[in-house]
Length: 394
Image 1 (tube, rainbow, N blue to C red):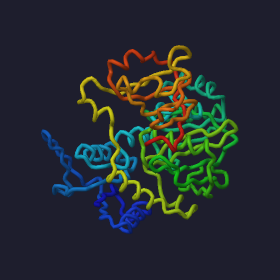
Image 2: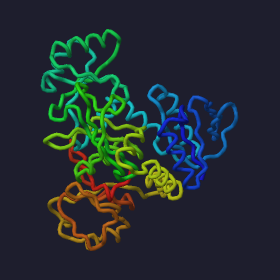
Image 3: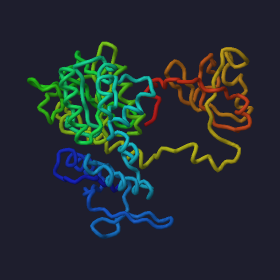
Image 4: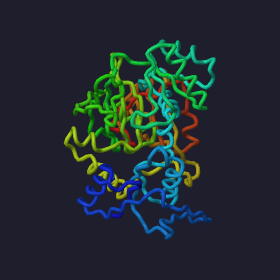
């Protein structure tokens, strides 16, 4: 199997470890500098050129796109996708996670803890924003930044006003975020690969530094996450569309609060403190995905006229509650139940003897004319619940 690592520094720890792990698994590994690509566009023939020559075939790509290269780097990743090459993280997922505002916007729709955050563009909105997140001290963040850059702790309201006004003077929009005092100087980094957390660590800031990033001198220790933190990390990565991700969470009395989802998490800190071969786990996952690719059911079945995918809701009254899936006669109507969601947990491929209960949500594939009579209006403002990660797919 031939795998490319998109990286501008072949000697950095993460790139080197991925290459070593791939070679140890009999893969042909190539490190390609993202800046050296040229994108070719022709009818039915998307193409890539590297150092002026047409790129040879690759089975998979592992993007390690730096923040400064996000626009062009994601264009290269998107071109690989158009050419049918498996990408460990897609272009859209990388773009969504790189923008802190867009990341929080995506997460805010779901039942996942996040710190109250306000986007401030106008100076007259500064004071209301600080008050809405609970008052000073507050965290002030630039929309883009990595390794703790662009993150400032404002201890008082006056300091916060001065910082935000200064950044506005430089034409910068900022995020004002609630400061969680109980987690000051520490956070959890969960490393997600596919649909599981493969390693996790607690990062603790040193001295007066409030940022726990290892690049800021933070110290890491391996931790075992409880089920809630584990589920939160997996679903946060899935919401962002990331197959490989570093999910940063604060530990609070009310549970985990996601503060960032990183599409290019570093390997040095997590491998050093846990002693785990995280790079090898990434390579194993990539190989599995190339050999057994995920299928988009809607896309693959769209050519089957009259058939489609729909979500059916089991009402409190009627014929469905109390019956098994078999007794409900769905199979006779040419309807197949793919998943059943109940109380935030998802059962894949439920059996015919599974008893239906009010509130169950069934993801079904079948004849659309038959399903139309069973579809009920969606509940408004319904929060997406954290699903059982053992049954979910990235």
